[in-house]
Length: 629
Image 1: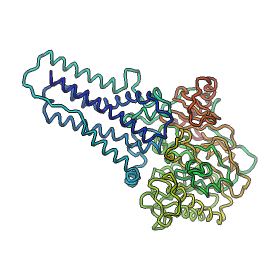
Image 2: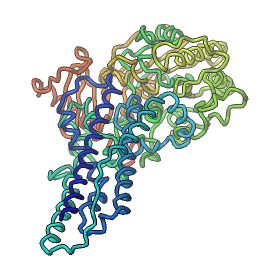
Image 3: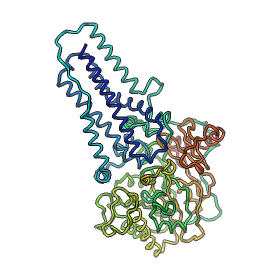
């Protein structure tokens, strides 16, 4: 029995060693993302042990059984060497996956899932971008290599002395009992305990505020929980059909005696131009002198919000008014080919020519596929760009040249036209054209220089566009796809991580300007454009026009709904509200006022629940168009 005890003791030492490694990585994650969280309670770190144990026992189930199985064969050197290397390889892969979020969390605001870790939707970009990421974040990759070396170096080990004596029946029964005990422990600890449902990502809220749940979680746990996860949504049943229709309807109808204005519409989506990069909003780190001047001539929404943290979430929100609240990108979801309302589809029925431009190579982020789904007539990517010498070598065509190409094509389109362009240069790897190197300040953020360059490219575009006949008869909408990461040493709350500029500019309407303090989200662009054009036919939209007083700002973050209604920001976990803040007076969300405002919570939920039930169920039933309502 001595060797068997050694084997069990070695197993326990290795499991404890592994648990310590996960805890060290949790501390490193917090250090790398120090400015992403507000408060670091011990409870979050202690609660994280439960999630660590779950992933440890699941991923090491065969190793645990191999240590605990009765039999003298396992004391041989070959067996032990195989066991050690299996332990090292399996756990090194899992542990190093945490290093992804040392970097990527800044961009996504959540622990990586299976789709993120496998670059779902970015398959074609990853080969070109990975070297740039490695060069920029070399110190993270170096830390990963050193960690992998140290992890191997200190793996607990022991020596076994082969014993030819036969074991007694009693000893065999004890060993079988311990083997069964460990088999049961794999199931119980792996599922997170004896509670009715296995441990889920959302259970992290039991140990930290919603903002700090990524501290509790670990990356391999989140990846495992989303492998082969059934993507289809489940119907929500907060209200019966009759009650739901009385509480909320997505059908919009802006009846007006003024005839429909067949103005051209141009939507410009600026890569990573979060509010922090716009000097109108942030004089300290913003770098947008031209955009600032345009804001002064436009209707500008001071409280503008993105519907997601990645580019792939922005496009369906801006163009089709699809809120990003299904837990994955709409473009790569099982609902991507649902029948939808979109600006290209609606405006084509009014005689519009429609087109979409993206300077990256065709296939990038599935934008060309989405353009087809959304109903655009034409897609123009890097492959359609006719000139040589303007490729950045990694990503696509530099913004200055591609915006000029955009202008050249607009001149050729029959009016009225609807066209949208998505810029690329203010994105990792932040490549500057040789002719402009040294012309723009580098500032204190990685985005500063290329934001200044794209702002200059935007200025050049408008300087040329205003010379064209189509210019005055055009409504311009300018926004960003999402925020960028925060300046080092600054904290951004969850709300601030979604703030973006949104402005409407009509050269023919000089009085159509001012700074609006209404809450405004990307999904509000579609109904606002149609309202501005005096579109008088009913349509389905989950956004609201700028003329509407009531706006629901909604995002889905770490498996919970984050919403703003009026002055209040609240977090709804799918069944109940768990946090409530007055964001106008508490932007850092330090004072959770839920306990003192039960009636307010009910009022807010009565607005939120019918909204998400309507969207969720219409998406499931493919009834997001007027003719299917």
